[in-house]
Image 1 (cartoon, rainbow, N blue to C red):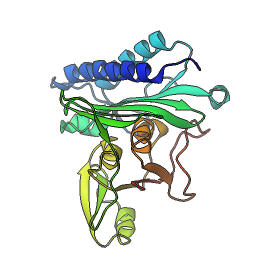
Image 2 (cartoon, rainbow, N blue to C red; image 1 turned 30 degrees about the horizontal axis):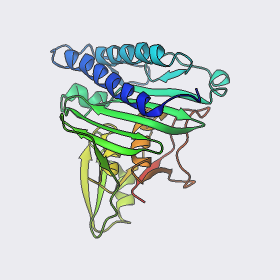
Image 3 (cartoon, one colour; image 1 turned 135 degrees about the vertical axis):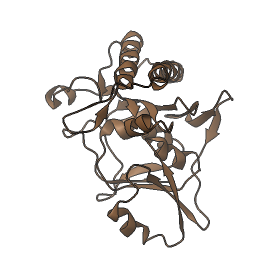
Image 4 (cartoon, rainbow, N blue to C red; image 1 turned 180 degrees about the vertical axis):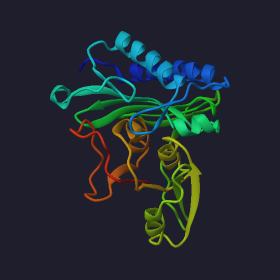
Length: 258
């Protein structure tokens, strides 16, 4: 694994994310999205599985020795996972609610985790035809439509603080309390992991997440914002978010431009 060329690997992941996105779009265009519900009442569609199949098949082909942890894959016991020094952490379709609403704000998320930290992350929004990606020692980039990759960096606010909030969880009482600390703010509503990417590319300044998320929801975008000069912090401990914990639930966190 030490001999991996991360730049070439990143190019491969960009291609895989687009292939997975195409699989999602084929189903997105249908009237029947094949919606079912998991035990925790969260929605699942045929597109989640189609994207997951593409990603897992491709990753096993290019990096057969690196294990995969996916939201849609089988649950892997921590006794096995704790031995992993490096692994893929993927969410084949983040923003299923946005997918069902057909507002286009959903993403394919693929991250490479090393020693609990994301070192490569790709976030692809198929409907928007936009990809954000970050790579250790290389920085973060955004490709809009079919343009060339543009390097992105977080932006420190001069006056008004642009605060990203979830389109699906906009009426969170905890958020109203949090926002009292930012009297001069502007809300930017968005779905899925795009919210984190908006901080990375300077479209927003902070994103407080005051509700439950899982590791696969944040890992890829974490790499994007981390290598764009920002980071994601546990709101309680103030430490950077870490991955491959015994409990895969994230703490409440803040995506910050500083």
